[in-house]
Image 1 (cartoon, rainbow, N blue to C red):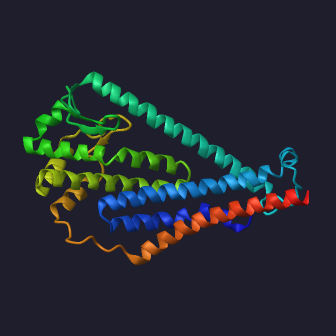
Image 2 (image 1 turned 45 degrees about the horizontal axis):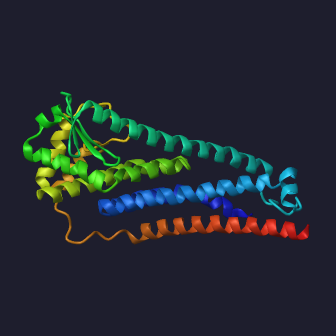
Image 3 (image 1 turned 30 degrees about the horizontal axis):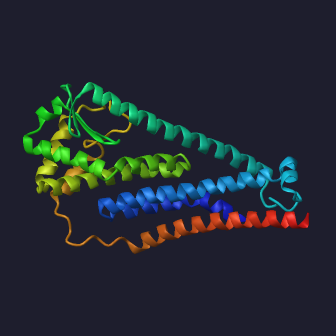
Amino acid sequence: MNYTVWVPLVLPLLAVPAARRLAEALPPRLAAWLLAGTAVALAACSTVALLLLAGAGALRLPPVAALGHFELPVVGDQVTVAAACVAAVLLAVVVTALVRTARRHLVLAARARRDAVAAGTAAGDLTVLQDPGPDAYALPGRPGRIVVTTGMLRALGAAEREALLAHERAHLAGRHHLFLAAFALARSCHPALRALRGPLSYALERWADEAAAAAVGDRRLAARAIGRAALASRPGAPRPHAALPATTGPVPRRVAALLTLPPARAPRAPRTIALVLASCLTLSAACALEAAHDLHGSIELAQGER
């Protein structure tokens, strides 16, 4: 393997700022897809690079070489033992983090739904908790549920409650929990990807805001509902791990966006930023494939010389 195997490990440092900048110029739905897709693609390429580095080092071990029937000097010649060992350690950390993150999401999401149903009064997709503290959030599942406290119901008017519930239903309909789950797995693979967490959460909330405004037919009503719900909510209120609340993120910025009429046409994304991001993603995938092809060719050459 040559230098190409290192490229997927470095490119996220350039691709992440480009993705953040590009997402600001896109509609919320496209921004969410862009951020989540970028994170998953970069995570996959960097993990493959670690796997190839660790694999090249493993092929230099005499037992592995004997098992594959190839000569040691040919395979992994450009990968040092130290680099392979570091890659193996990092790969083990990544795999452990992926398993723990996936298990945590599955277990805590199921527990949150079970606890909400047991503690509240269910009516359709709505569960009402007897709690004076105002709060509302969506819980994914089959089917998904909207959890709202009696305190939140009292804090809002009838029309505002309808807008708030429309926001939470938009989270469930858009399967926004899958975006967050995919990102949680991706950020376990490369530390640079953590910088996309805030923009992705904001894009998902703005997506739900716009869906709620369309559902009630009044952008000002949706903005008022989001603002009043955020003011009424308790700061730092405990919520289930998988909850998607309407009162998170930069609420003033979201309210201002709802009070501003959307442009007649979608804004044009900055071409330079889009080109930089597309180049990073393409180059990362191409280098990972090239490194895999190069390692495979070295193994075949070693087996042939044997």
